Length: 356
Length: 254
Image (cartoon, rainbow over all chains, first blue to last red; front, side, top):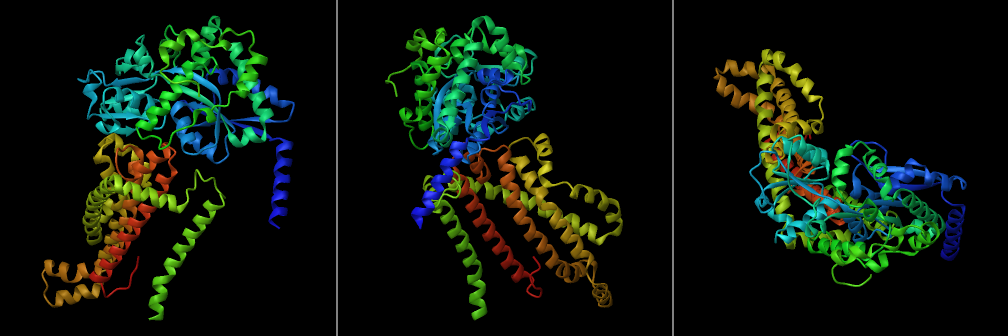
């Protein structure tokens, strides 16, 4: 009886898989402006309807889901089967994988996500050491959290050395301005705010200092294991489109277009421009699993374990599935210079350890 | 005897059934095991939390906030309720305004609490106090108003002073309703403290649950749910016992 039931279940499952899904659920981190607009390479693909065009011939729609709860909420979506593919921050990706969610890291996301530690403009706190024991706000479970934990670890401190308040960027700015917290760890919004005299930036990774830059956050593009098993062909085509979009937009001549694209959800363009500084957005966003990226992810996992954010290690070799990107780079990006990686950057940004 | 045994066993049998259903749902992975953690793993998390001292720390903070917030809210509720219940003029003045505020769900007060009291302890205490205030106020006011006219007349006949009338007639008559309000409020205090700690806290069982959720440690979330439930049952039982002891002449109304 059980064998029959299993056979019928298997048959139904296979039939469903063969029939293909009606939709591909693409989860995107929400933004403070509540606009359903993605940024970066996925944002370019959204703007030009590249995913929609690719899958329209099969009658498959792209369902864009913007998660206001950012990375932690996307993890819940992945766990309950509501997300097929997503691009989100380093820490949520690590937390999800370590928490048992079946994900595959199929494409490296962006690197170079800065953090800004801001205080009220008239604060008498001037150094990171001054913040010890003070009221600090940030959004836990996001890349900011991981970068902060790595930063204070260098000072020999842990989260327990601060009064930590879990606040979104909007809540954080309000709390900072009303004097309810002493500092907030946030994104580039503080550049604009500092210029207008609403805050003072005490520390940032937006600097030429290599030590500080090493703390910049990164993102991961993951697919749910279930989706990858059921529809490897669709996932391959999705990655192909991603790489096609990368080829189209990752060109230093298109710097202004990139800044407009990044600001499109509602962010002030000037913030984006200053956040990027003199850095190459091509190097920061090229979808290549080079040693620079792998070094960052290794140290991210190590720091998460060390800070008790995850309770078990992640087998990086098993998590990363290079096959989709490898094929996509061969078919879509053979002419792109960045497809070969950035060996010149590797030496300064990776620690010890081999490939996963 | 048979009835007593039934009263004891009936709730446990339902709780055991829920536990069994939880175990089976997790065992057969009706919901993803990363979301619905099996009961045994949750129990292990609780033991780990106890051994590390985190459970005592977080629970200690939540209990402290409940005790203080409840004390302030329920105390104010009794005072204002007694005043409104005993004076028609006061009720005419303040009753309608309080009725308007009563319509606002306690969670809607959260942003105001943060604006006025900041994000540290005061706002959490205020949040719990507001949640506890209205049930106590309404029940106290109702209890005082429902003191039977004939009892007051008897007091007058016996020449009782206003103080004696209050202590011997008003308090015993209003006490069952007041206790009902107090019992309703303690349940709300628990709900409020967990919500207040979800908003912006660095300690407490509500904070622990949110933090666990953000770290995708669902065993921590479920452990928090269980602990809040157990403490809720314990406080409710405590208040039930207090009610039976203080007003043995009435049947339970809550």
